[in-house]
Image (cartoon, rainbow, N blue to C red):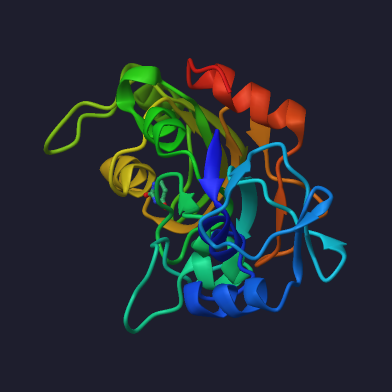
Length: 238
Ligand code: URA
């Protein structure tokens, strides 16, 4: 695959399109062994591109995990409120990275982000049954009957939830694994058994656990093995 050099440099965050033209004109960009000034030059995806002698990271596909803190919106942009994209360096927005599904504003934990729209779509598609695991704190006293209700499939107003695994950790906290991710689903499931959620944290998404060394608001790129596991879970090849 090839791409115009000015587009590539803009995507990877070197500068705006016009800024990039100036950078090119000044002879600051080298592609492999050659200084290239032509904005329309077609760069191969395997080419090595340098700015002022420093090799650029020109990967166009990126996959990240973010430890979403509370109080931040899962959205690409918002006029008033801080979004998860604002927790990342601007290059990820320039590359078209998007959150995989949503966590509520007050929910914390593992949020995946990717530049691959098809991957994101499949990971959240109800048909693929990619499991997500949350730790919920509730107002109430969790009991064995709740485990059974979750396993049977909680009926909500508009649909019946697929069977979910509820593991009681303390009388007020539980680990819950669901195969789908409808709007406010976890909160609605606990509300349906009369124990509203007071705190919600996502610990796993499909094959991936939240990296224990990340603090709220921090992110890291996924490893090659994690990316393969994610594509496999989505029924796709990378
Ligand atoms: N279910 C919810 O209710 N909220 C979330 O943020 C995620 C799953």
